Image 1: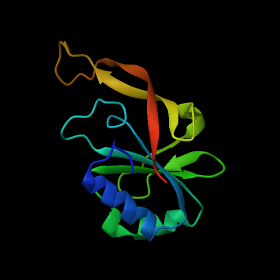
Image 2: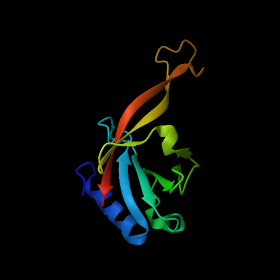
Image 3: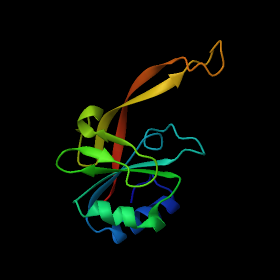
Image 4: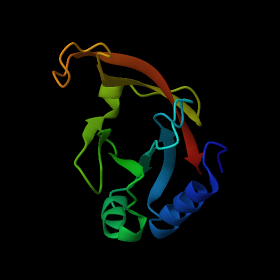
Length: 140
């Protein structure tokens, strides 16, 4: 499996795909895939599968981890959502998801970046930052 995952995450992905055989692909993205992770960074995964994958993942509570942000893609629409925890939705088209190969894709990330020199603490001044990032298929 991918060198982007530590041993704990390799085991977790193996447990995920074993528990939910309707998963077709697992991709890592976010800070860990783009060499920007800190020690406390979560693990961001994008999962592709059949419609049967969603109820399987939702009901497999032993796989729900606070340090994993999993987004499940609904084929063929490309819409995705988080199957547990705080709601998060989006679409591959809004991310401008583009396959470079069968193992590497690019996407656009939009993130709020607060001003470091905020004159009034807590005033939430800042800007939206757009980044071109990469995602890597880690399974199969």
